[in-house]
Image (cartoon, rainbow, N blue to C red):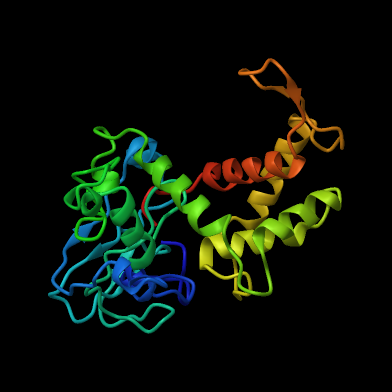
Length: 278
């Protein structure tokens, strides 16, 4: 839980935070998104280092979804007690029916569209269609919590799905006003001094739109981390790094924008979140 209402965290944040409705995310290819089933039941599972309760900022309850409750209340971090009674999230939801598509993994991959794409390309749908699948027994639509539950079986799953989303959604982003690839090149050509680029990419990552309004979680932290990475790797110097083509033995100089794009991937995947499931 990150999105508070009057200082309290609605339990229905599992349906969406910061103005989002995760179960309403639509794909351009309609048949690819996950169907929303009101009888789905899931409870967020903490994994890896986040399973250590001593690291938690407080005791905010895990996300869950289920069909039985008409309203779910909220959590008060000041009293550390539940608030009983209807308590709406930022989109007016007071229940958690069909709200099982909250963020999971290193990039907090969320929503019916992206989880549906994961299922189509990497998960059980791909396997059932006779195609190669990285996670043939993971149904990202019916059981999205398997991302966290199967981390021992698939140790890199939280990173694999994050890289998939970054390549498929962030690097290809173009809404007619903001094109990630062009903006990245302009950012690099301008000496990587414009902080608005990081903020806009943060909006795309967190809210799905370059023009989204409102607060972006960890936006300043991302900017600080990027500057530290650039200084540590000495990439503020316009001279790009030299690498070698191992097949030919010839050296070549990669585009600095490519290196910066890779740094952005590390930046957004590496920001420490309080929980694996948010």
